[in-house]
Image (cartoon, rainbow, N blue to C red; front, side, top):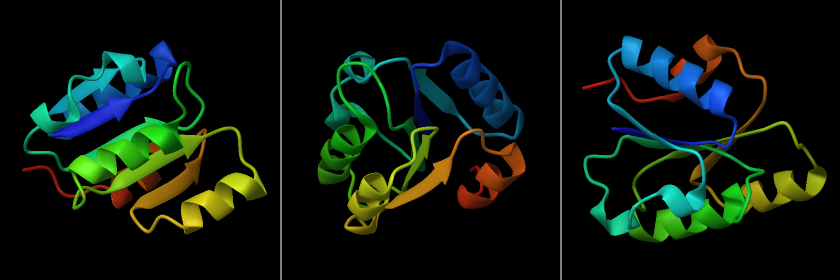
Length: 115
């Protein structure tokens, strides 16, 4: 299952539709607070999330997620690029950082094959 967390409704809906069309089971949320208890998420293949969100930034959420699901890769997408963010990501070997807008084919190459 792909968990998609992004507060841009249009982007999230379009990406979820593309992923589903390619055979992924997708669960998507607009805000970190909308995500159920992390321990309740099962059969996860990847987390795709935005960096800049209301309430909690993607980096903080990714850290919490990684504590519960240490083997699940995280792809963080952002339009808010900075050297500070790059440095923070470099300290976390479980996050792949890419800029928005991202070409769907590029994103698909980062994901595990759907099961």
